[in-house]
Length: 119
Image (cartoon, rainbow, N blue to C red; front, side):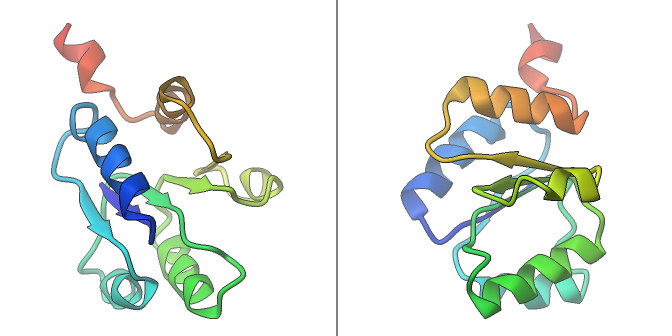
């Protein structure tokens, strides 16, 4: 899974939440210029992406486009509401969000929550 966010405090919180719930490592990429080539070249293909970059910045848009070409389940932080209707694998989450909000978003992706599997 990948957390794409410039906000390292937010990224750390997201990592703590998801590392116990989604199998596999959680990678944080704080810079869209770093993430874009990884996505474009296929070096990064997570089961789930959390996209927190600002979509009004050109370099974030390039990263978003590279991510969308992979058709990965994506939780878009503060994203446009209409995107969910256009792409069935995107879920929008507004900041500030709670643990319950994250649990709901994870459930919507269809990925198994390991905390429920293990208990």
